[in-house]
Image (cartoon, rainbow, N blue to C red):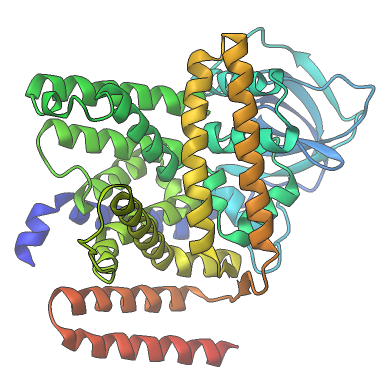
Length: 473
């Protein structure tokens, strides 16, 4: 155990950092922000930080006020020219804390995202005081670039439903996503497909690797130290460019930081994907963005990656090797086995957080991943080709048609899975049960790794979990 901690220094650094952040934001920071909301309407100046997000009766804007950020909902009016990103607005309203959505603390969720509250304004309660000729910050430039790339999809006539899925899958742009599509992906257990994160960056890195090594035909050259560094640095630069065009969203930045650490480990001939790398990425992110610790996407992404690293090798052992297979059949079997084992490991790691925050989970997540992930990989290959060669109209039109076909197939498949009986299981758990669940997972890992006597601890933890659940229910 001592040797393990010596080889994983960032794991030790991460533990006290998380403890300090939890203490600070649980006992001090919330008290400092209790006076943000006001019940009386007042005039205030704000700067539009993002493109609007359309709702049924309003447009939602992210507004930077004097000392905080807020969501401002402007009621729709066809006679009014809407503000653009970077504009300065004069608002006459009040910033309020939103109500909870059932058991979900929506106000706390917004606070952890850096949003102080929400405000609703009518057409006569706001006015544009100044217009920015161009984006004023790096984030605004990133969002402007993202918006222009989405417009290229629209210029080639891709259907609106397909554009929503393609833009979310490739650029992290969700403003064109239909509510029915989002609900279908959520019920089918494919929400991670619509949020650019580790899965998408991993596919992009695989695409870059294939292109830079000529589909592994130059693999021996990669082993040379100089070429190894060139390829690794190229991947790092291109992935940060990808993070920029996806709007520098926190989930993408987290994934690209992990990719950068992995490529640096490649250059140093170290294990690129390990618990130490994951802990180092989390440590760096929390040093600069400590509130990410309370972000649901942060917790889910690192829980999934950690579970894959720890549990996937043991789940893979449950499948026979089938050494008699050759050629395409062997590659198909290895791919299917890897997809199933990774999906199961990620589901085990994220299940308690999903039940804790959302109170439901999909029972067909394996079927969904078997269909959606290969299609998503094809779509990302087509997207890379589209932006590389789409300036040629004939090629661009052909690629746009293929994108439309595969996106429509993906959406149709997800809708079909959503309609299957018992697709969604509703189960709510509390924080205590989350810790008991993870304790049981750790004990199961120790049972496979060290001694089967640890299965006694697994049994006790499982019994305690059931006892707490039935007691509270």
